[in-house]
Amino acid sequence: MPATSAASIARVQANWNARCTMTATVRIRTGVNASGQPIYAAPIVYACFITQDIQQIRDTTGQLVTSIGRVAFAFPGPYGLVPHDSVTLPDGTSPLIAKVQRDNNTAGLQIQPVTCWMV
Image 1 (cartoon, one colour):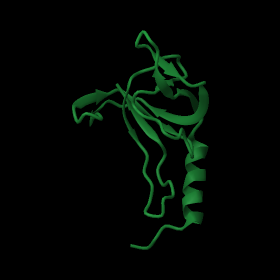
Image 2 (tube, rainbow, N blue to C red):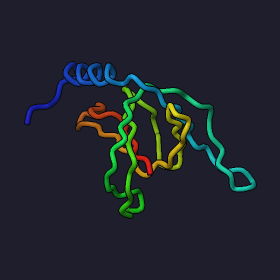
Image 3 (tube, one colour):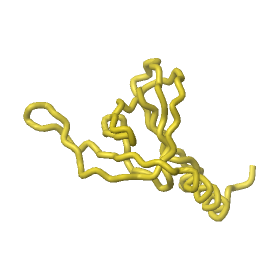
Image 4 (cartoon, rainbow, N blue to C red):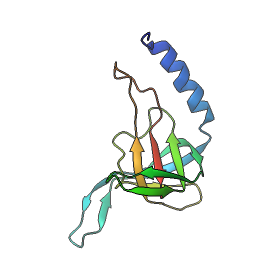
């Protein structure tokens, strides 16, 4: 299988970014306070593509859960997003994040958008 060139990856990323017409606000969890409540970094708004499709997925513990939708961010997307972080959708809701996926090719170039599944 031939290696994917940086130029072709850039084209794929540009095409994907053109589809990302919505926005979601991401807050990365930085810790917890003395009461055990999460502490988050400043919110950052990212362009994204949101789908509301119900499907069975495995969460980070391996448990089978029902996802209510997913958010795929424009490139490069939120770096370091994990299920404990907060994503606020355009309608103001902040569903729980069950799984986050970020795929890179063998050269370390990002070939898929950062995607999170919500429950």
